[in-house]
Image 1 (spheres, helix red, strand yellow):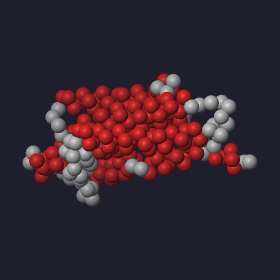
Image 2 (cartoon, helix red, strand yellow):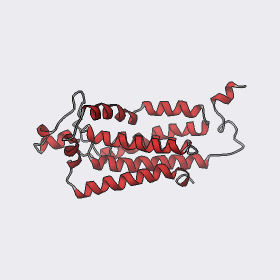
Image 3 (tube, rainbow, N blue to C red):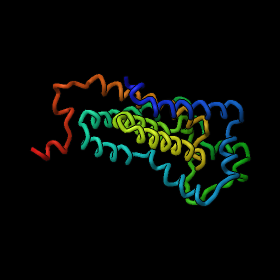
Image 4 (cartoon, rainbow, N blue to C red):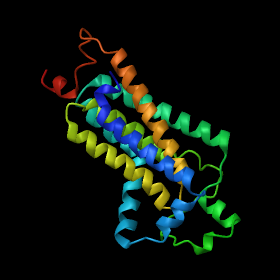
Length: 219
């Protein structure tokens, strides 16, 4: 049920993963960053600077507040997301320890040829794979799409937003395309797992979990 109920979002995620994976296997490591670097515009720079922040911590707070006014059971799942996302991201970053794009391009004497965006701090640690922002975006937006699955337009908006976050990490020279491709898959899995847990704890007789803050204000 967790997948079929949210199939619009997951089909969009799968399509993005397949397309990005195809480009990863057809090209060389870093090709996507170089290609985007050659096509920068001031409008895209501003857009991706803003959209990349959707993958940050504040999105959990916003979703938690919204879901507290919708259904406590779903709000509880935001706490699970806040545990799973950093656990998955940090564990894999430590295991694979892949260099960030700036370090990779510097070591290969390519960095100076890139068109870098002003005002963006480029990281150099071995924390490139996978993209934490992308995992976070697909996990949070994926679960939000599940929670509001009755409204199909929300699913379309959220999957586009998730993909935009993923692309922003490549555009801003913070991650490789492979990093966001895998990040999208991991984030979607976390969203699916969290949605499944939400379905498992659903109980029609458990009134408080199915209520919200608005209902308590009426008492």
